[in-house]
Image (cartoon, rainbow, N blue to C red; front, side, top):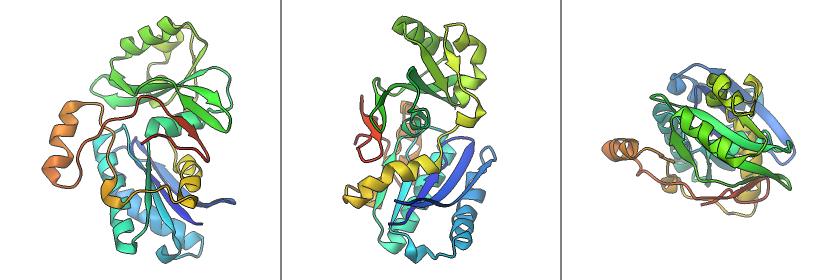
Length: 250
């Protein structure tokens, strides 16, 4: 089964083709808000490099955020357009879950932290679980000092990863946390495909119109998709297991 993954919720955009046997082709760029210029070109690049056609794709996986509004809009709209045109099933996963999955082998409490702009961060906490990670908190949005207070209150050894953690390294390290490097700064389409493949195989998928962005700010949900007449804002589940072969949550 060939799955196309699209991750555009942060300043890094990535596109990937993968199967049960592993990665087929991928492309990524750190281009700030230029998600629209990259995404369609990257899909064509991956198909060309693998000598494949869009008709060879069996499903489309996409990141639902939380993240940058423009990136979320571009990624979801692209996934919807491709899936509608080819009548393909889709799977949507959370960006913070994808980021945590990259650190699944560590024994520390994992904190995925993404830059939310406006002086705020998106974050969630995870623990290692067989084959992946288990989310142990709700998705949150707030100022960096709020996150630092939560970490101190937990009293655990914490690994904070993501571009938001790197940007506020000094503050988070003052809590005793370890902060990851730029190699784990962004969610990636590779993890998106790996996590979504089992769901495609067992046909636990969605229709394109069911893709719902994960908003953590009420204002974004009000002015975003409703005004554009495309999608409606959504909320995140409180906890979920994130692993290849298991659900990430509704």
